Length: 247
Image 1: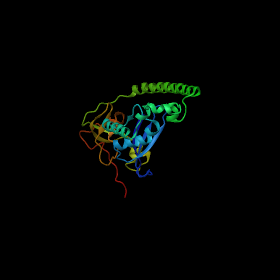
Image 2: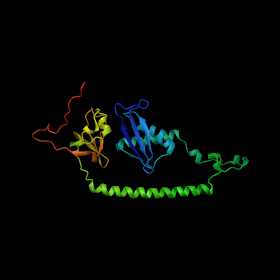
Image 3: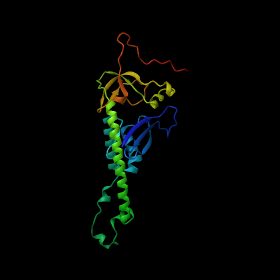
Image 4: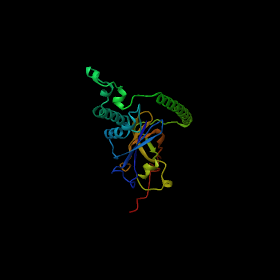
C-alpha cells in the first residue's frame, strides 16, 4: 500500500476547512482513498485518519510505502497500533469460552452466533477459488509489468550521491509550484534553487533546506534533485530571479 501527502492550491476549495490531502493507494488493485487533512498533519493525526478511513474498511495492510521520512513513519505505526490496541478488541471473538452453560443451549455452529450464517457452502468455496485464481493471474501480470518497467528505468537511472552542504536544484511538481504563486503551467520553471542538502533520508531521498516561502515537505527523492554548479567569478549568476508580484 502506498501513501502520499499532497497540499492543495491556495485557491482550491477547502474540504471541511482542511487544506491537504492524504492519498492511500492499494498497490494491487490501484484503488485510491483520498483523505482530507490539515496542512501540518502530524504522524499521530495521520494514524487516526488512516484508522478511520482505511483500516476501518479494508483492514491493516502488510506494509506501507510512504513519502515521509522514517521518523514520521515510525511514529505513525506506533500511534496506529496504540489506537488499535485501545479501541479495537478482537481477542474475545477468537477465544470463546466453553463451560457447562453451553450444554443447555440449542446446538448452533460458531458461525451462526458470530456472523449470522452457518458457514461456507461448496458454491462459496468455488467462487472464492475462482476469485483467487483471477487475482493470482492479475498479480503475475502486474509483477511482470513492474519488472519490465524497473529494467528499463534502471538503464537510465543514475542517482547522484550528495553530502551535507552540497548545493542542489529541486524539481517541483506543478501542483507544488502553483501553491507558491498562480503561474501558467507553460511558465513553470523546471527547477528551483539552489538549496543546501541537510542530510540523507533512507536510501535515495534527501532533506533540503528550503526557504520559508516554500511551504512544502523538504524531503525529495534523488530523481528530483540535480547538482548545482555555481559560477566562481559571478556567484549570483544562475540564481532564481523573478519580477515582484504586481499589487
